[in-house]
Length: 179
Image (tube, rainbow, N blue to C red; front, side, top):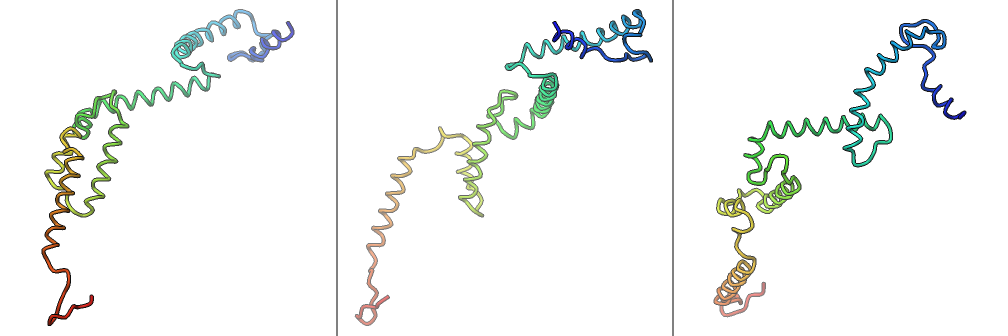
């Protein structure tokens, strides 16, 4: 019982607003008016807090955390509104990969990183139009790796055959030149 008395006493202010006297000296009608006024403010806060806690995955440890969670939620809602407001621009920029709030941003980041790699491979050369068109169609439009390797190997063989037609030894007045 002693603990409950201490807990209750810690909640009671020494004075209430609009009274110069200590709480124990304040007339009961004034205390009741103060309690009704406080209750009028606390009921909406308690209801909103109950709603927040009901939707939380993890129950907040204190009211400060509830306030921070609400601020974080407000920031997310602002971002959502910003995305909705910029929908046309984002649709134009990211094409078929943009799906509003359901957009897979990791996928878009991966595509942007791939584009950076491609640009670095072309160094200062402009990216060929045919390459850009095929790349824009996605992986299903790209030629198979096997076909590309076969063509590369065939090209290397043709080059080797061509090189074989030329003398490898350089001569001057029927004398071999040392290089």
